[in-house]
Amino acid sequence: MNKIEHIGIAVKDLEKSNELFAKLLGKPHYKTETVESEMVRTSFFQTGESKIELVEASNPDSAIAKFIEKRGEGMHHIAFEVDDIEKEIARLFSEGFEPTGSSKTPFRGADNKLVFFFHPKTTNGVLIELCQEIK
Ligand code: ZN
Image 1: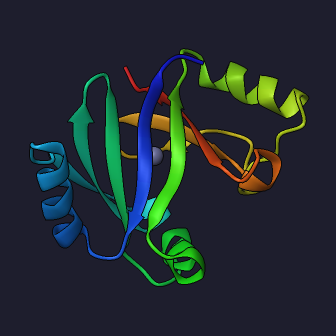
Image 2 (image 1 turned 180 degrees about the vertical axis):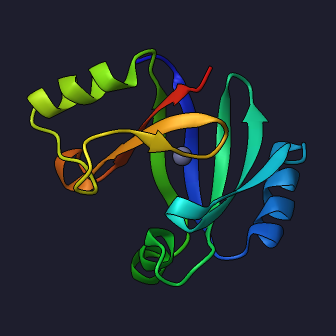
């Protein structure tokens, strides 16, 4: 795995949180994007070589809505950049890590990335995202 590509933060109100994080980081977000398959709206801030991704549920059935219901707003996942996502997924499966869903293949996430998630129950309570830039 390479650098921490971004840290995902679950928020209730993307517009309000965009303002808050713009104050915190001293710069505005540079994009907003809806990911229909995940039922979320996201926004991104560049912080050095990593990013902050704010994630808001666009539907009450979204995993983000359930996360906020249970644990409130806050840190949701850490995303690592990888060069070969299929290879890293296979490696983590062989090490006994379990995915969040039943699929074993990466899918298209926000920010022009192929992504895949490993369940926090097998990773010390931290939801792990792998992401690879789509070229
Ligand atoms: Zn993410």
